Image 1 (cartoon, chains in turn blue, orange):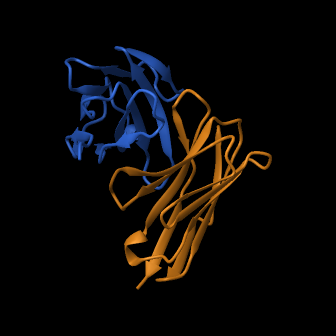
Image 2 (cartoon, rainbow over the protein chains, first blue to last red; image 1 turned 45 degrees about the vertical axis):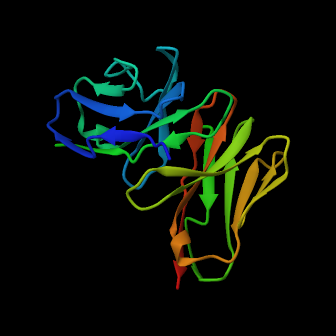
Length: 113
Length: 110
């Protein structure tokens, strides 16, 4: 069964560094999402992406964040200058046209020190 | 915030018993979805109920939706140890961006 994959599974970085989290959505899916979950808290919507552009973004998704689909398979989330409070689990999700169900990847645990 | 709370925060039951989790939300929705998360893993979609539906079944899962009260419940019947996980409701206001609740941590004791 096809699944969403994410790399790396765990990323440790120093405050102020740039990080890129990578996702490979399911191949026939057209809508892509990033969510984050700070330890012990709820899953929060960051951004949605369709047709090579951002559809919607939350207040969390400020100028430090960007997303890109550099080729036909990868979907990336970049944080330009990480802060301690960016430490969280980041989940990528994708879905097909006409279907509401989203398929989530296993997540990348980002630790900012 | 579009999402409210889920209760209980934690639920511990014996295998074979039923588990009921509740979810409240704040805004109008297009649909409400329930997801499951095993510890440290991604979320898995369980069931979706549209705003014009009141009840939906899928295997051992039963979901209800009361839009007048802005609430939903998830019932897992005849629970199994493998059902141990966190369960989240997520609302979709129509843009297909999901807003999650705080989750219920379910423990099923063998």
